[in-house]
Amino acid sequence: MENAGFRLEESIAREIVRRTMLILDTNVNVMDARGIIIASGDEERVGDLHEGALLALMQKRTVEIDAATTDRLHGVRPGINLPLRCGGELAGVVGLSGEPDTLREHGELVRMTAEMMLEQARLTRLLSRDTRLREELVLTLVRNETLPDGIDDWAQRLGIDPALPRVVAVIEVDSARLGVDAALGELHQLQTLLAEPERGNLFAIVSLSEIVVLKPVVLSADGWNVDEHRERVHALLARMQGRSSVGVRIALGNYFGGPGAMARSYYTARTTLDVGKRRNPEAQAFFYEDLALPVLLDGLREGWRANELRRPLERLSAQDANGLLRRTLMAWFAHDMQGAHAAQALHVHRNTLDYRLARIMAITGLDLARVDDRMRLYLALELWTGRPNRPESSNPVKSHKSVTDS
Image (spheres, rainbow, N blue to C red):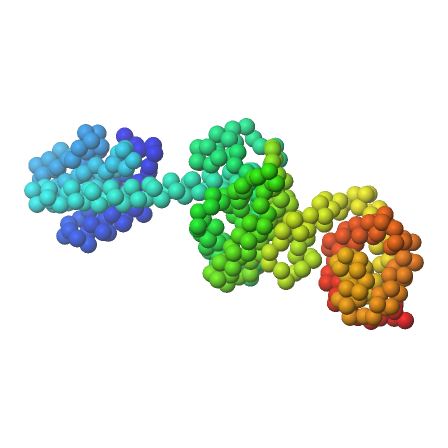
């Protein structure tokens, strides 16, 4: 007798009772698929077995009980009991207490109203379940380069084309000062924005401060259109800022094809966000295409190779207590090794810049006129600036004249 697909919950049953008793001057009971009263205008009857409801469930029809019948059945009073269906299956029974002759004309209306409420609850539950399954699918795709068997069938059951090319974006929400409920509210609001307009985005909440988005891309002979997605990121950021009171950052990763593509794309998006925040803490949008080299180098931060690459900066740091020379080197590289532009950004004379660069070469033993030595210093600087608890500022132009120049 029980409905395997839908369970009549007490909260819905109580709402059926409440709404019906606002209209009809009679007691109302709602029984589940076992015939147990789970909601009633008479609270003392909750939990009792209703044999009239059992009859309605077994016979799958409306059962009327008059005064004479009450003597032969347990837990019943005169009234009318109407079976409730949801999703094509019996879910329970709604019972109206009183003389059947006076209740008959209202019974079908009550049943229709109750079944509409049940159907709405069932659809809401299905949508919630599908949303949860879609999020689980997204998290599985971005966390595993080797995907479990059956992932394609899982995606297709949810109406998702697993072969559709996608690129990953990471949205970071500044929720540190919010409580859990407030943070979740912000995340759900952002999810609504991601779903409108419909662009086929897949998304999932990773944590209270992060949403991951799988964005469809259109491939051509030249690859995917990065500029188009750059514009969309900025447009989305503007919409989010208009509706959210918390800070939001977005990082767009790189597109990959083949097995494990989403996991690699997620890694580039997540690392792009980390690198971008270190380089420009005030920015709100970051793109792998702008930070490809430092993002790729990020995987070299540990191990003996990283230690060897950082060694020139360790020598420089030992004689650069206030970080002036390192900031100078950062500004020089940031302006494509153009001395005039770097000096202007540092607010120093060109001769001062040349003196500092000469000091850097003397300390590190590397020649900035040689391509290989430039590359070693650049890689060392990239790995050094990503280290936690480093003493110097990440902004290369915020420098001061120091005794190093004298």
